[in-house]
View (cartoon, rainbow, N blue to C red):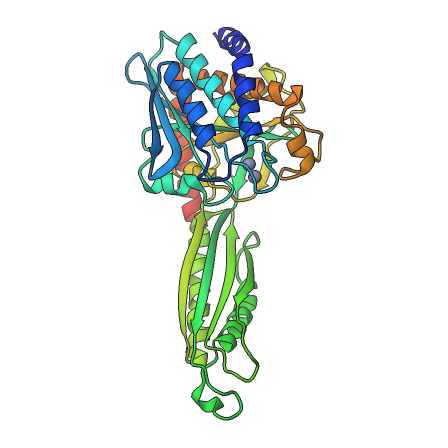
Length: 392
Ligand SMILES: [Zn+2]
Ligand SMILES: [Zn+2]
């Protein structure tokens, strides 16, 4: 059956590469991906999918569904299509839509005798406002049992963990006054910042090793002879365990409270972004990598233990998911670089789309054709999520 999926995907290669080229040649920033989202969702509509473009209050997000038989698992296929400011498609997101479409349509055409749902989600603004976070908030992804993605890369592999991250802005509000004539009437918001940073440095000693805390001053301007009324700092707190991170954030808030009490100022804490850590599901990763070997994907490497923060983490904290990273550039080429972008229309890029589609289609087949495989993935996800909670 997998051979049939593979040859079907080969047969639609030309359509996929021309869509990839079109998205590459029309790079669109987050929430402005009008051409890309229309191209992809129109193609799905033409292929019999039921399509809603503009969901979760995001004009460039879409959902496309197709039912094969009745009941069975619901396979989620997610794609991004936003580009980078001044750099174009230097993160390779133009390849994701075509990969996901090839996967979805091959499953629909070839696995007619089975029972399952296919749900494609177009997810905007990964690089900027993290579209998947809002989509989750608005109820997206509740209709899928497992979520797949692809991302182009220098090697072919999957990730085990990802960093949860919370970003904050903290305003300290003080009272301005003449620093020489009436300092006793002033309360310095900048003093509060300095004490806050000092407190964070002491906190750093008493958190788990993988906790990362970094900060900066965003605004504390003004003349030296005026007691500063308002100071604003920015900070990020990260950990590979979202549940542990929540406990660190509470302690960070206490440090801010303490700094405010000491300086008789008030603190205002604004959370600007929250990305979750994924729950590792090794059997799902294994299925993907076995299929990567089956199709002879280029430059196969062992799983990456730990990676940075991404909005797909929020999805993978909520339900089992995995992303196949597929090789198309030389080892060591970083994403968001000119070299990464310049490889976006090469034969290697076109092949990466096809390899990734075959890997995801074969993995979806493994899941929808064997209930034990599906059940095991759900069980491992639930168990590991519980373990992460208990680690605190
Ligand atoms: Zn990127
Ligand atoms: Zn990316």
